[in-house]
Image 1 (spheres, rainbow over the protein chains, first blue to last red):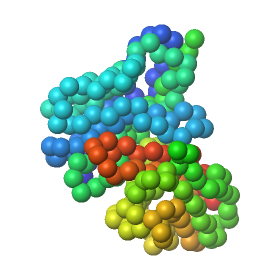
Image 2: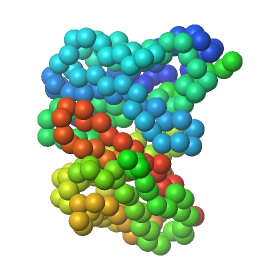
Image 3: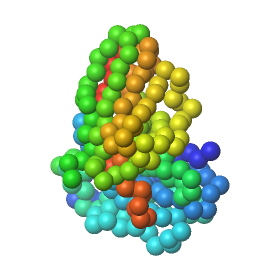
Length: 115
Length: 115
């Protein structure tokens, strides 16, 4: 069974600084997707960034980028130029490439951006 | 695109009562998912549909839980004989199931409190 581990329950960063959130996962599959989702306080979850395991290039979306280390089964999220609006819970999630669409989530990291 | 909607947003019920939640996916999406999120945890997969067919059910979904998507549009999740352990946020998500994005769009959730 696949598992996703986020070892940082809480992180904080000053506005305009850079922060990295960690995620590791366990799977025996070779093809899969990895995601970072953001859940702001009292608001719905939205997708931040997605990585296909068969792609060697790390995904980037504006201020958000990932460091995908397939051999180490590591998938960290880097947020550059942090903004107050980045304050949220961040969930790392895994999806098997074949025969299922379900997302397997980690326990989340609460990120606080302060002025 | 009005997004995924869920109704009600909050439900308080007494132990032993039945409750039903509704989810309206994004109109052109043929896949619909239910997740449960307890405090301090990431969402856990419950079940998902492709059109009206229920393709996968988690072992978390006990016999007291039933989900339907009768016409391949909206879905309902019913919990019979509620227990205090059912208190959680119930999230619905939808996706187009096309292309290679596999992005799931989440609704705001229904928060259930069982007293």
